[in-house]
Image (tube, rainbow, N blue to C red; front, side, top):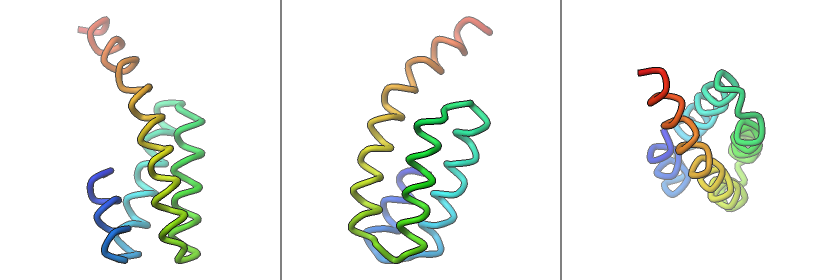
Amino acid sequence: QLRDLRKGLSTGEAQGALRCAHTLKGLLLTLAAQPAADSALEVERAVRASDFPRATSLLTRLESQLARLLPELETLLRRAA
């Protein structure tokens, strides 16, 4: 989703970028990752407003949040196995 979102933002493909941001937001809410979900919502709103430079900047923040979240998820998966 992140790769597709970044591609959509770089090419100006609003519908695809919007769909990816919305999907990420939903996935993050399912995981109770509220700060990252909030960032995904901000990206979604920027795309809706056709503010691609802002959306790209916000995506960088979202990616940083996801980088912190992934090790936690990996730990949970190992414990569940």
